[in-house]
Image 1 (tube, rainbow, N blue to C red):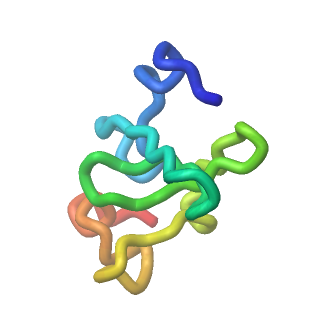
Image 2 (image 1 turned 120 degrees about the vertical axis):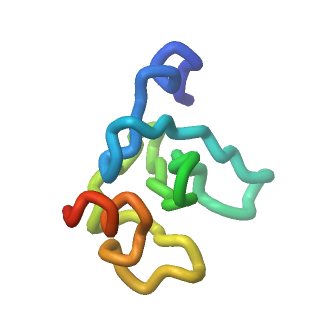
Amino acid sequence: MISEEFLSILRCPLDTNVPLRLDQPEAGSEVPALVCTRCSTRFLIHDSIPNLLPEDAVLPPDCRDLYQLPCQRRSGRA
């Protein structure tokens, strides 16, 4: 799927200082995703291609929109 070398250079598109981790779900349960190590936003992987578009991200359960994420409040982006 995603090599360790590639994963080591990937950063969250919402805060480029924060690395992503690979979340490989158990067989048949969920779609694999890259997860922001800071705010837990999930970027889904389809056919081994990560979708790093912020507007397509799966937000953490306690977050209604991108503007509520810590990295967006701090920087005023989104």
